[in-house]
Amino acid sequence: MDIGCGTGLELEYIFQKAPHAKLFCLDLSEKMLNKLKEKYRSKIDQIETRAGSYLEISLEKNRYDYIVSVMTLHHLKYTKKLQLYKNIYKALKESGKYIEGDYIVEETKEQKILKNVEKNTADKTNGEYHIDLPFSIRTQKQILAESGFRNFNLIYKRDEAAVYSVCK
Ligand SMILES: C[S@@+](CC[C@H](N)C(=O)[O-])C[C@H]1O[C@@H](n2cnc3c(N)ncnc32)[C@H](O)[C@@H]1O
Image 1 (cartoon, rainbow, N blue to C red):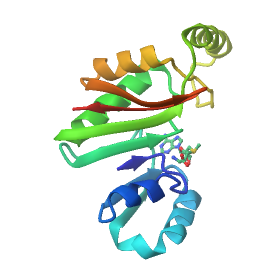
Image 2 (cartoon, helix red, strand yellow; image 1 turned 30 degrees about the vertical axis):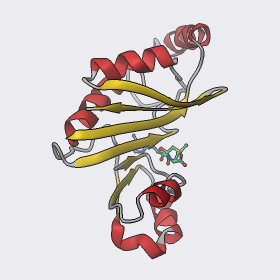
Image 3 (cartoon, rainbow, N blue to C red; image 1 turned 90 degrees about the vertical axis):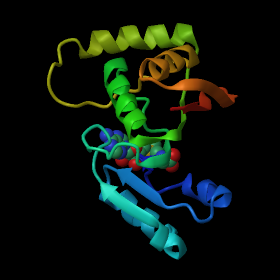
Image 4 (cartoon, rainbow, N blue to C red; image 1 turned 135 degrees about the vertical axis):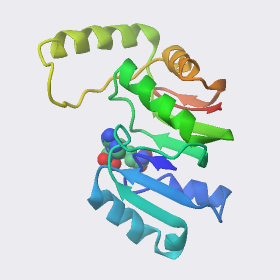
């Protein structure tokens, strides 16, 4: 499953590694999903898409071998991300893996961003608003462990981008 798949940039690499993979691609935007389907016409039998939010969808337990997310979770606050990771954990098979690529910052920058976010959102108790809230590798490791995952593996890190995986 690819959550927040957009137009499916990462699918190209997934299909290189696993040409027969069956994918469930979830995104808020129907428009993005239509582009994805157009782009991967030749693999359409292997792709199921759904327009919806990964914060709201109810996922079947022990269903997926892999769940991936790329550049889509860095706007979530700690507690929301924790809840989502717990749902991802449940949706994975026992031998399953979660792989995430996202915007990552150093710990000092993370603290500054957090303070600003608290200040700017303190008076907004309702409604949704987009904020960039990238975490450090240390915080990512902590939330994933708190969700039940183990074996945090930092696969790639360059400037403010990183890819890491965890096992159920
Ligand atoms: C920056 S794009 C990344 C797309 C793709 N993963 C990539 O790396 O090319 C972020 C995507 O996350 C989707 N998104 C944001 N919040 C979402 C949510 N709550 N549920 C599902 N998709 C979401 C957006 O619609 C957008 O397509």
